[in-house]
Structures are given as C-alpha cells and as structure tokens.
Length: 193
Length: 193
DNA sequence: ATGCCTTCGAATTAATTGGTCGATAATTCG
DNA sequence: CGAATTATCGACCAATTAATTCGAAGGCAT
Image (cartoon, rainbow over all chains, first blue to last red; front, side, top):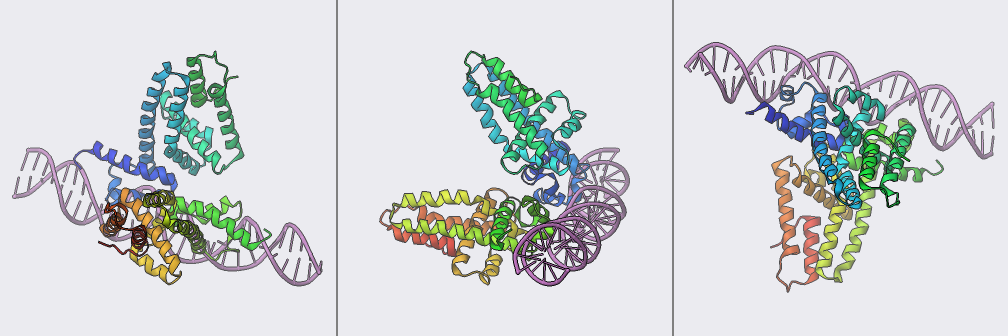
C-alpha cells in the first residue's frame, strides 16, 4: 500500500461491514484479513488489536452519523412532520449500527456502563451520537429479544419520552421546542412532561 | 414440555432465526439455548447434535419454499409478467435463506459438491428446492463479495440462463414453455438458447 | 417409595482465535 | 548497485471457547 492512512481507511470500511453484521465477538481477524485479501498478521502492522480496529470503525460511523444529524438539525425551520419523517427514516437506516450495541453486549456492559466508559474517551458531541447508536441498538433489541429486564425498562422509558414531543398533538407547541425536546430525549435521556 | 414434537418445532423456529443471521458456524449452542431459555444440555435431549438441528431447520425452510413455489407453478395460466413479478418478489424474501449458503461455505463445499451431498439425503423435490436456496444464496454473494472465481462463474451462468426465458421479448413463445424454461434453469441448471 | 421423563451444571475434549515473531519480500534511498 | 527501511506473511502459541457427555436431581404418576 502506498499510504498508511489510506490502508487504514480500507480496513475500517471492510471490517465495518463485517462487524455490523456479526458484532464484535463473532467477527474474527481471519475474516477481516480474508476480506482484505491479506495475511492476518499484516493487519497488526496497521492496527494494534481487534479492539483498535473496532474503535476506529465506531468512530468512523459516528462521524457519518454526526454529519447526518447536523443536516437534520439545520432543517429546524421546516414543518414538524417533515422533521419527524426525517428522523424516523434515519432511524431505520441506522439499523446496521445496532449491531455495535450487540458488540457492547458481548462485553457485558450495560447501557449506562457503556456510556461511562465512552465518556472518558470521546468528547461531548461523540458521546451524544454514541448514545443515539445505543438507543437504536436497544430499540431493535426490544422488538426482538431483550436480554435483561433492566435494559428493557430503560428503553421503554426512552420510547415513552420520545412520544411526548413527537406525537403529542397540542398544536401550539412551536417547532423548535419540539425538536429540542426530541433531541434531549435521544441525546441526553431527559424526558419532559 | 408436554409434547416432544411440539418442542422440536420450537427449537427449529428459534434456531432457524439465529442460523439465518449468523450461519451455521457462528451460531452457538449456547445462543440457541439462551433463546429458548433452557440449559444447553437439555437440547441434546431432543436433538442429536448441532448439525441435527441445522438439518431440521433447512428441511423446514425447504418445505415452506416448496409450498410457495407450488402456488407459483399453479399460477401458470396468468400472464408472464405476473409470474415474473412473483418469482422476483419471492427471491427477495428468500434472502434469509441465503445464509444457509454461507453455512455451506463454512463447510468448504462448493455449489456442486453440496448438491451431491444433498442428493443422497433428500428426494428429488427437496433437491430442487435446495438448489434454489443455493441459487439465492449465490446471488447475494455475487452482489457482495465473491469468494472464488469458480463460484462466481457458476452464478453468472445461472443468471444468464435466467435472462433468456424471463426477458427475451420474442412474443410468440408461449407461457408454459417460458415457465418451464425458468424452472429448468432454477432447479436443474439447464440453460436454453 | 419406585421408576420415568425432563432438565441442568459441571467436566471433558477438540477446535478456534487473537496475537507474536522471525523470515522474507518489496521498496526507498544513498 | 546495495543497504536500510517498509510491508507482508506463515508458522506457532497460549488462552479461550464451544460441542458434547454424564451423572445427579427435580417433578410427577403410579
């Protein structure tokens, strides 16, 4: 490879696909290597460990997510329904990210432990995004199989909190307030009445 | 459990979901057990082995497929476009089956070796269906990553062969002939000119 | 109690897998 | 060119994992 950074990007894309389908634990270094048509040991020339790759992948995905969300937030002046649609369409397309949540499960960290772990590594904005990732992952879990009652409850709360600004019909609530309420729920877990 | 057969069915459904997502190799007995809320060793009371479960799952899916295809074949008198639509809609929904193909890959059998292996176990009809499963799996592989040039070529041939009866415009070819040509390609790999 | 059906935890054994290391290509540079 | 640096790889290892076995035991009818 000509460029070290270039190659890292390739790994991130390739490994990202595998991680997103199989989760952290089930993805093997052999597979990643095979997908790259390289020897397994070569990868260790560019990355320290499997976790190192994973972290790079998550960071990469988080950046994409941030960009998309920035766009969404800029659309604040458009009608609420458009906004709602946008958010939910995005939610669907984020599905693959939900598998990072599974990866987190592999590590036996729960919802909040994970946030604490991440908080030390990423700045505020990334944290918010990762929270969203977790939320989407959790959402999927709820509709399939839920591992712990505790997690299920936490998710129900989030969904409940989301209902208020999204679906409450009271018409005079202005759009900006609604959006802020949505973002507060999604990003910081703050539920309003 | 009250009924042994009843329980087997439960296992087949539950394990089927996991297999279809992760493939044979990546699916663990622990996971299957967990999904059933049972001890791992209990499963061995109902099934001989992991492979035994897998085989039951494949057979089950194959039966569903057969029923659907029977319906399709009965629709022979409807217009060709309707038929074509039906086939392709089905193809999409068969996607989860494609993962059995991955499972086959885990065993390092290629397309044709697998058919030979199956031929000894299942009757003619099942074989035909399993061929279809393989085809769909292969199709997906082609559009993602192809492992071996050989497999890729085999799949291209199938797709090519499908083009003729499906898309050839020559209007006077009658519907039954077309359908038969389609089925010949899908089921037996016979490509016509 | 006795025996049968069912479940399970613990033990076993074989395979898998993340990671290391030294050798060896390939490339760069003096 | 040839030495130094960069990149790749195969073989190997230690630790873990995962399929399967087995004996114990819970529950239930007789």
